[in-house]
Image (cartoon, rainbow, N blue to C red; front, side):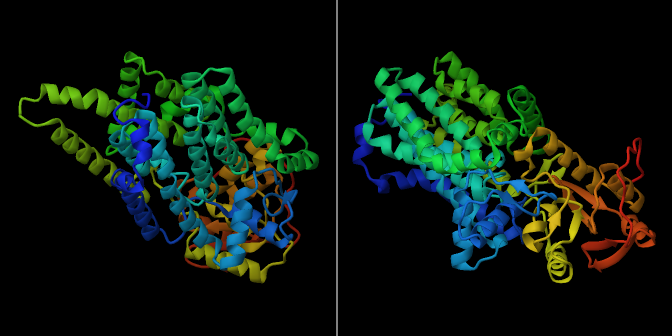
Amino acid sequence: MASHQTDSKTTQDQRGLEYELPWLVPALLAGTCIFYFYVSSHSYPSFGAGLYFHIAEHISESGYALPETIPGYTAEGVPFAYPPLMFYVSAIILDVTGLSPFTVAQYLPGLVSIAYLVPLYFFARDLFGSRPQASLATLIVAVSPPVLQWHISAGGIVRAPALLFSLIGIYAGLHLFRDGDTKWLIPALITFTLTILTHPMYTIFFVLTYLLLYLRFDRSFEGLLRGLFVGLGGVLLTTPWWSSVLVAHGSTVFTAAAGTHGGIGNALPMLERLIGRQVNDSPLLVLWHIIAIAGCFWLLLKREYFLPVWLFLTVVTIEEARFVFLIAALVSSRFLFRGVVPRLHKASVVTFGREEIVTFSVVLLVTVSLSGGALYATGGLNAHAGSPSLPQFVNDGDVEAMEWTERNTSPSARFVVLGDAAEWFPQQTDRTMLVGPWGVEWKGHQQYREQLREFRRLSRCHSSNCLTVRLMQFGVHPEYVYIPKGVYTVRGMQRHQPNQMITTMMTSPQYHLAFENEEVAIFKLTDGWHPPRSGTTGPIPV
């Protein structure tokens, strides 16, 4: 996979962007189409970014000072230990443009998701020494649901820029370690610093990839010094952020968060579950998964170890499919062009040339992939245990209910919110939500799991009796409960609230209807009634 394969580095450097555009256009066009399908089919952004925008607004209101705690999410609030870059960027965007958080969350991640295809293409081009291979790999990433899921959706306000920074840095790292080109030291340092300040998971991905690039292409003392310059330099440049977090919350805040989103022991089972779900629920896309697996074996047989090792180490260190399938796209493209197409050409009994075979094969695969990606972006695929892909956490009824809450309840009022609308609730209402896992990872594994468990169990209640017993069991004392009607989601999984829930709430002496529309009902707990902490166990009626 060195640069002498197919296109020489000198030739690549001499040709300008106009020569690269024909190879970039398929991926950029596919990414643009996916983005269009997504925004056209979603009135509100998918998944949640309410906490992120609540942080941005809190930063703006405090004069752009670094906050210590973010209120609204649980009674005590959550520690602010997130890398701060994109929250400051979001605060500036909100202040300068006057756009709503919903609008920014719906459009900005998708635009950045198109932008990160550019450094990915150039990295693949220079890694493979082949523009066609780079073009196909980038196209696969552009339409791949596991990559799209967390980058085009609302949370992509942080994750998509993190991937953009890390891919630029990885491209720089390829030239640092393979070519010994020191002009890439500063771009590598800058992008690593930006990645640290954006998202910890992408920082791990960045570091892991740099280690592998060094071991594959360099292994010299000078290369080690270049890597240390980038790594230690990024850590030093981000000292004002992480040192302030350590002073405010101690070192345990970082170790606490590290244990809440999986780990090495869970990575392989996670991948098995993910592949199984894709095989069962996404028939249009399963082909790419089979190609990637076959491609890994083929590369090992050809003694091209870098991509399989990169893929394997990513699986066992980062429990996130978005990174796994990004590398799998590179594997697939390499395998198709170097392994499959030459064999098809040799075995063909029809007098097709290599160029015709490549064109036909790629067009067919691209058509299948783009169709699957479009279905995924519009919510047309079953991607969450039978639930539609890219679900919206809120709808018009939620927005109306949250506006009523902000106007008609005390700023000190405390709520229990059922369903995923809870993620946006504190940001939209400036009221406290007592139960919810968002941001609690910084408090530690146990508290995160407790909040997640309570949120799920409360959100699955379908009667007043279930709700009352759960509140007693968890020792939660809200003044209001917020109940979705009809279809809603719990952690992205679609559920249906039966009419029985509202009927039993209306007839219960413990709750009084305060607001209702077609999508939401808000009940005030009867004056003087507070559920005591209880050791209630056993089955609870729903």
